[in-house]
Length: 298
Image 1 (cartoon, rainbow, N blue to C red):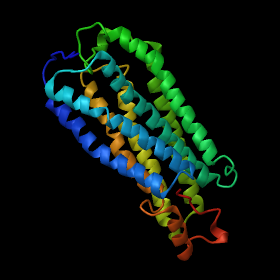
Image 2 (cartoon, rainbow, N blue to C red):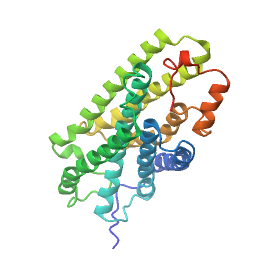
Image 3 (tube, rainbow, N blue to C red):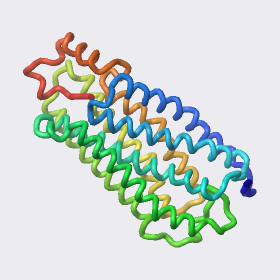
Image 4 (spheres, helix red, strand yellow):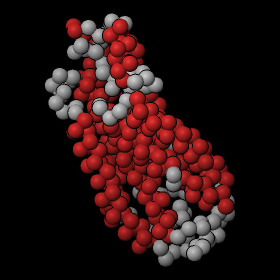
């Protein structure tokens, strides 16, 4: 059944914007996921979190074609149920991405600042348990959100992605997203400060400069993604503006930036893990004396 409804007309700027994210995000995350699974397996906590992050981004990307169609034509051809599911995919990506990125930061923090004391915590088993709990939290949070979304918008005259929130009261449930994002941002800021302090204090050897820069780039990219992609749209959920679709587009850009995180997080990203470790041993970068201070990038 065709439920298409005319809107105020096509909005080609948004169509091009979301189309660009889709064109870049799909191959970048598909290739990144293939490399993570094929060459780095799932034997480290960071790799496990990154695989789940790539899956989250791919789920977002597969929802973008309908956004592109909607903004290009000004009509919504599918049902309200389809609209709500696509909206939930976007919400889930913002939520799960911000959490997985924070877990990657925490893993790097433990590896650099407390490498020996936290070795028993940084296991693949604990990483998988954490990933499962994250997905359960994200899915469970969808239940009340979808009920509210349906009750507000199913019988109105608006179409998908153009619900006028300024006419509707804000519920306590909608504060969950900004509160969560700001808590995670604070964790990332603290992690960045602690790691930076540790690196300045203990790792001045020139042979480790590349690793040191890579570690700080990881944290810098995490902060950039939070401040540019996650924070504005989380605030926009409460403080509605006509430019809210622009904030949604800005948030969706995170799926194009995440593959850079994988590149800097995993040493020799394009090589198998064992090849990378062997190369470091051959070059003499890892010695028994230096093992405690060497920055693990996997």
